[in-house]
Length: 153
Length: 153
Ligand SMILES: CC(=O)N[C@@H]1[C@@H](O)[C@H](O)[C@@H](COP(=O)(O)O)O[C@@H]1O
Ligand SMILES: CC(=O)N[C@@H]1[C@@H](O)[C@H](O)[C@@H](COP(=O)(O)O)O[C@@H]1O
Image (cartoon, rainbow over all chains, first blue to last red; front, side, top):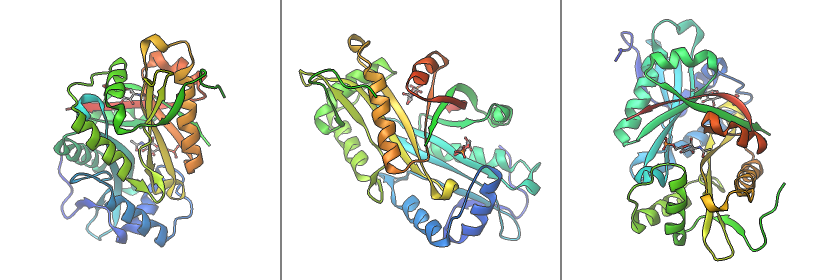
């Protein structure tokens, strides 16, 4: 496993990360208008739902030496009937700030998230991505498993 | 949209569905040893986590005229930062009893789940499946969106 650049830290997302997280996520897709209040309510929701002691949401940030958010991602833990009431981790909303690419932050973040999921006892971790990102996720240790399908409203 | 065969009903999964749900899910994958107590704790968890008024888990069963569970599926609702703190529905663990195939129960179940997700305000519903099930999900109104990747522990 890789290590973070000197002085960078990785930790759970908190309310103070409002502007950092909303801005880094613009690399991934449409963020739109999110107010500080909406973000704070989201963090309250993320912090409130658990499976016993396990947080369902595990939104994580990597912060640089200036205290700025440079990458973010989440792993949502779901409890199922199958696999003996098994847990599955869904890796979601991975984004790395454009000017920080080449430092392996994406790899470190993904490995951090699936290590978390493994410690929680998940029997697998899954994610969905574009065909163009398959190579990156393979380097992170994932393998193709199936097809993502959607309906948009 | 299709309608259920005469006398069949569709509703949220409850504790009494222990043997029906665990047995129908064997069509999909490994269920393993699940005790009634474990199932009841799972239902308690499923019923306890919400996003405001919206249940995060929406496990659903179709029940036949004898009161037996003949199909089951879930839609897990996730709240994100992206898409203005948007909601996404994850359709999971769809199974129809082998001897009930040909009655469009799978189609009715999927449409029921994505209608729920739509009513909750989700901006999209996604699911992962094998390449061999793409045709079925296309008939249900979904389109290919990406690649599912996994790590198993
Ligand atoms: C591994 C990863 O980060 N996958 C993301 C997913 O988590 C995110 O929610 C989605 C947003 O796309 P959308 O704007 O089309 O909903 O893109 C990608 O599939
Ligand atoms: C739409 C649908 O029902 N997809 C299911 C998924 O929900 C389920 O959790 C998984 C179990 O497979 P596993 O036993 O390999 O984890 O199979 C399929 O991908």
